[in-house]
Amino acid sequence: MRLIAYDPFVSDERASRLGVRLASLDDVLAEADFVTIHLPRTPDTEGLIDAAALARAKPGIRIVNVARGGLVDEDALAAAIADGQVGGAAVDVFATEPTTESPLFGLPQVVVTPHLGASTQEAQDKAGTSVAAAVVAALAGELVPTAVNLDLGPRVADEARPYVDLAERLGRIFACFSFGLPAELRVSVRGRDIAEAVRAISLSAVKGALATASETPVSFVNAPVLAARHGMSWREEAVAEAAGYRSVVRLTGTVAGKPRAIAGSVMGHRGAVLVEIDGYEIEFPIASHMVLVRNSDTPGVIGRVGTLLGDAGINIADMAVGRGPNHGAMMGISLDQPMDDDLVERLRNVDGVLAARYIRLP
Image (cartoon, rainbow, N blue to C red; front, side, top):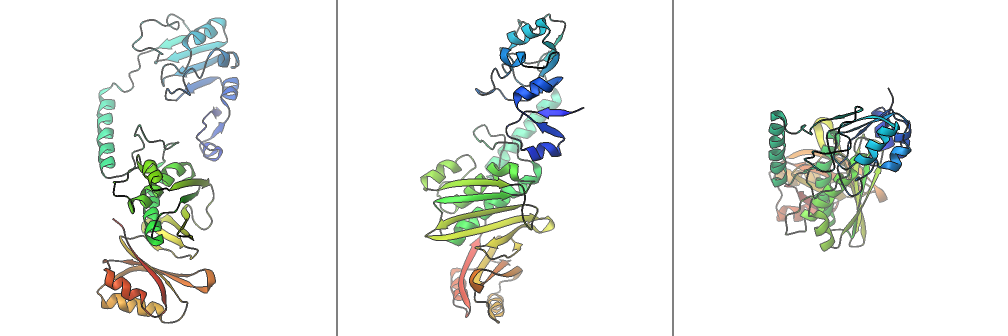
């Protein structure tokens, strides 16, 4: 059996991994022996398979519509069956429901049944559980892909969900590190596991960045409106390959005339990690309390910073150092305790420290 599909939201690469070849709707109808429909009813899909489409279909084609009524023109389908162009059909949805009359009734080549898939006891129990879980997620500010006023494009796959959470953290870190929001936030999603979730990931990054500047609670639904109010737009891109990591989310933008960049990934038991800050390649876990230190690349700076934190009773949970542009260096430090403003200022005055940002995530 060969599978061919029409889906404008799925990439060729993902379809290939599923053993499916993507094609246009006309090509699907012209080549397939059996066509099953899995679509919502919208202004774009209503009447999708009409008399003209059926006339172009492969002679003897069988059509199964158990999605929504109105996607297939019932009069046209009945006429095509009577003419022999269509070999048969199975339908449990109709343009008008409940229905007692249809041109498909009485045709021996057609199987019609009530649309009862969601009316079983098990389905009703599952629907209630799903709604309750969605409410809990919404109240916690998490992603609810089934929200009717949220356009995320294709379904967010399970493997992409950790990157949705990562993007929100990166958005917060970007805004805190930069001391503001960019006029345009560019979100680059790299990796075959997450490329299709670019809309959800980019929206999550915007949500995180806005949370640092908005007095109004930011959600996935109101983030676009609040972004416009703050004069911030965003642009997203998706690339299937990510150099050095399985998948990476990278945010870039200009704040107060200075280009900024931050990138992160998800790495097994380590969870969410930072992998780049303003061109410095450093790799350390994202934590509730972090300090980012730009310093001269000279001996003794790391020791002085560690001594200052130790004397203040601050335990270093994780640390990474990296070199970057102009022969400078960057320290990324995850902390077990918060830093107060006085300690941050003392850190900035340590010999060899050029800049320091303390970031606290909720």
